[in-house]
Amino acid sequence: MFQSVIVKLTAVCIMDCTYCYMFNQVDRTYTRVPRRMPLDTALRLLERICEHQPRGAAEPFSIVLHGGEPLLWPVACWSAFLDQVAQRRRDGWNLVVAVQTNLLRPLAPELQQLLRRHGVVLGISLDGPQAVNDAVRVDLRGRGTYDRVLANVRRLQDSGDGALIGGFLAVANPDLPPQAFLDWLRSLPVTKIDVLWPMEYHWRKPPWPLGGQGRYAAAPRYGQWFAELFGRWWALDDPTLQVRLFGNLLHLVLGGSGHVDVLVNDCYNMFVVNTDGRYEYPDYLRVAADGSAATPYTLEDTSLDSLSHDPLFARLLNLGAALPARCAACRHRALCGGGFLPGRSDAVRGISDRESVLCADQMYFFDAVANILHPALQKRGLHVSPAPRFAASASPAA
Ligand code: SF4
Image (cartoon, rainbow, N blue to C red; front, top):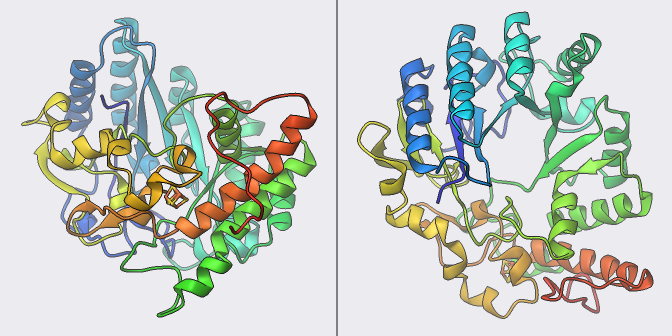
């Protein structure tokens, strides 16, 4: 069953981030869809979700409002949509709404009030200290955005609505030393962050130069960066510095379960709806080619139950059944499951049968984490999960 949707409320943005997969990579879908989702389309989506999700389900259905920039959606539409979500909740549906925004503009007071009333939390994109962030996260005139975003975060806190800020979202940047990243995190007004693995690499665009795969595998750039970041974060032993990826990882290693981005990869139970009311595959497949996330289905003609039978969605919903051959014998298969989906994206088939192009990075990272956690847990007389999700190795790059 689907448990999550990314809703493209707008196909426009007030920023022009260099790496943006919506506007600045191969996919040009934004040129073919309405700039804003009509309210009726958003309400039709809510009906589709409630047809699919049983009332009283224990696990919530997550509605992530996205774009473009979702805060450019008219306030009247926000009001009507959130009122309908609240009504569905009163009728017994377990729904959670969140927003992913750049927060470049201050939140309009009316919208701020609406989000507070409906318990909607904001994830805010920010990529590191000012110089690092402003090299890539620029406005439409090419100007850095860091100061304005943080001013708007502080404005929310000063007005008593700091609880609306769920945390920050940053894209991994190996040019930024991990200690500098952690120092920056500590300096933020909210010390909660998620760090995304890169989405731009796949087998037709690997992270190594032509002929350099062997050299890259011996010293994988992203794996080394994440490994050092984890080691330094663990050594700090400071629970106020929350890195979502690491929290999820600890949960899984200690025997928890779940389907989270980047980890496990046995099931992708989410879909995307664009402003035109058309279903799309996860954004992670958008990087493979123009239109590679497109489907022939719309909210009007297809229920979510029917959508789950589409061959690629069926594969995504049961991704663990198609573990790449190389991964079957891997010591990290339960935690990694073939790797982060963009690294497996394929312009023709959606997902290739191969492991992620970042396999060496992921292997390095999980080895390093295992080599820290195993002795730490044993020292405390604790055990890893009865079905251990990974085994310690002799060297981080083995
Ligand atoms: S580390 Fe590599 S081989 Fe192991 S599961 Fe991940 S992608 Fe597959």
